[in-house]
Length: 299
Image 1 (cartoon, one colour):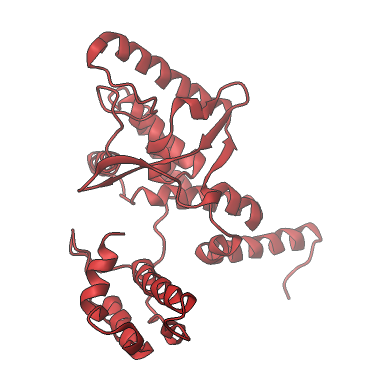
Image 2 (cartoon, one colour):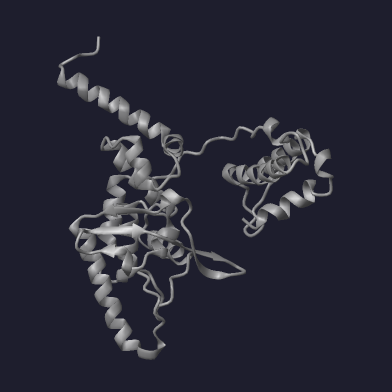
């Protein structure tokens, strides 16, 4: 994140590294948590972003310790302010059924119909979806592989990058319904390529602009927001579709290790931390099912 140095260096960069204490860093982290703002949109910084800043500082001190400049890393004494945990916004089954029904209407472009349905079926991140290429689709075995992401910055524009973590590279199997949607999209693209001719830019991406170039990262978000407003639907951001995917797996009794692999998390603890409440609810339901099967009655 390019905003990390732009905040860290003015705050503590004027100190000699051996003069920076845990107190200096703690004051900076507290300030970010309470008053930090995104440099682009002015919104308050998320707890995750504050953690990124602390990790960035800690990495610098770890290197200083490694090369013998310091004996210890002062970040070890720094703690993150406890923030209020926001409840994740997730669509209900009835809401997503309505969304799927409306996506099937004739006035919805096929690429958006496929994008949002695949988002729910796959749980892929937005950048992973936009980074998919046709060579990632194994038609014979009904598999889709995540091998890259499509990202955007003001300086670079749209660019291809590696996945978020090594474990984000994954291959999932999909039902025939999903593969049929993809096949329809592929046929439409092939037809458009023939019609446009020399104006077509070959990128092999699934989700593209009119001329074959990769779809912009913000396009799905704004299209979906307008779609929900037009149809009087509750709008949740695109990441909520990923959370919905995870919740469906958890409620179906899929264990945390399998869910973690499906979501492409770097470690199982990430999954259990993010979806702790969901797993607890699912476990409670499991106990009720067992009790009902054994004819136990609450006293």
